[in-house]
Length: 154
Image 1 (spheres, helix red, strand yellow):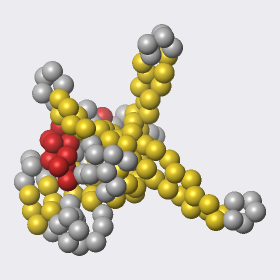
Image 2 (cartoon, rainbow, N blue to C red):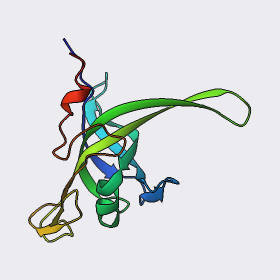
Image 3 (cartoon, rainbow, N blue to C red):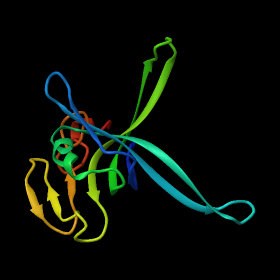
Image 4 (cartoon, rainbow, N blue to C red):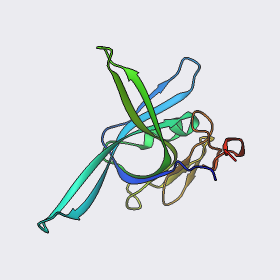
């Protein structure tokens, strides 16, 4: 049996996204996203726990959605977990976990800036939600957000 690396999140952007390009022209959009869970602690008091996620969006999808994402915007995100390592300035190995997004949908009330859909090719269609599905780039997923057959390990 193969393996599965899939993440589904609903949360809010912690700051405006940063769009940059690799030397060979690949777009990379990145931003922090907060998810908050609510629960009762041992004493029964209502409490909340916020988790921060580093989000990366590659290629045309990142370019298409960059102008629609702003600090505080609520989104639904579908993607996969990627862990990398690097040596800091003191030579200490550090680890970083990112979520590589393959699908993003803007959430919120109609008429609150969430009325467009952007396709991978950058086409804009009017609708009740903005949705962007990724493909190509670093994600390893096709344009519909599904894993390419060549990447299936069985």
